[in-house]
Image 1 (cartoon, rainbow, N blue to C red):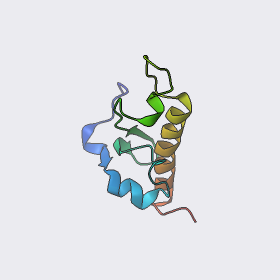
Image 2 (image 1 turned 120 degrees about the horizontal axis):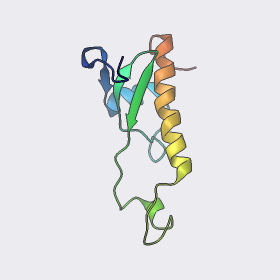
Image 3 (image 1 turned 180 degrees about the horizontal axis):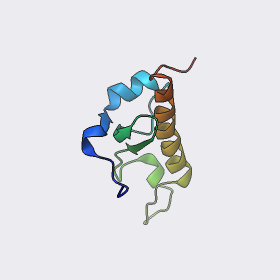
Image 4 (image 1 turned 90 degrees about the horizontal axis):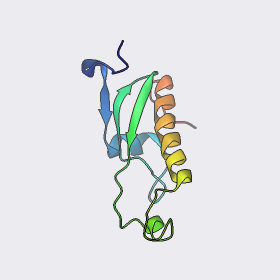
Length: 93
């Protein structure tokens, strides 16, 4: 295996599918789609950001950097979506 999932086994999930699964909402829903989803194995989350995001104003002025705590939360959302799939994609109580 070359580390790349076979495209015929991968799934993609849009924002509507994510919102059906995760309780998070704006401004703390930090993934916009899930790509390369292999249920029970792996997932890649995508968040679209622009320079106009409010956190870029102060982190760091003149050299915008995505805050690490938000990157971690994005990973948590992606992992949460993946783990919910272990229960046939049922919602957590």
